[in-house]
Length: 375
Image (cartoon, rainbow, N blue to C red):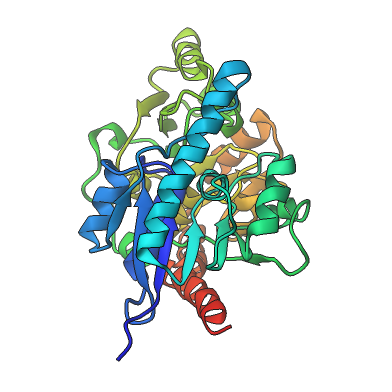
């Protein structure tokens, strides 16, 4: 009996963000009788360690990492690192001889494609961000067999550089069953209290909208001072230009220290979600929003911003959450409406989350792999 074909996954960082957690969910559910996985990553970090616990072979390419916009000599250093990382990947691929290659991010795809010749194997580019790509998008699209996106917003974004029929939409999946089995018993100390609890989670960077959230929290406090807000996350990669400390200082200056608490990076947000009444997601535009699905899975309704972006595709307005205009007043009104009175939305939220189970995501990816392996 022939062994299953090999799919090589490439990721450019070891830290666990949304893309990396989605990749681990895919590796967890992958049917090893259909496809055998290999992970190519920088090595020595959490992603590779988690992959090894899943019995996924890993290859370390230390030159991989985050790609920074630069000019002058620093730009040449970045280009040199891209080429060096790409060559490390190519050596790993020549040794492994995969049936196909799946780059888990745009930086991973760039590392792969800046080392010279085209791949002999099909190459899938997982395009997860709404940042303008310009010539980079066109360059990668010319070389990609298929472009995988996670939302209709990303599908529209990719239309600027993709060929007709090249884009495949596969929403991210989460461990819905595990989340739905969580009880509201082991409540973290920071989440314990008597008033309604609103949780937000994400990197502390400007586009995540925490300035708007703080303005909304101040408005809510004027009417219902017992409503509390927990913000989970940190500026782990230095992309926020010091905004995190500005927001923390705003909390202190406005006398909101008993209302808003920035907890920093939290390795496991699920207990906080299970203890909350509402997830407030003030980001715009958000490519997908894993945290939104995780909140729905534990029966927590979501307040998100209206518009053409991931959360508004996931949340059904009025059924398992609400879409609001991009103002602090609109956010505050939604919190006042939902906080402490969300029972009618809880089952709807759980039902909606099942459409984003990680097993469905994995099956769709494997179907895509199968079509190309057979061609």
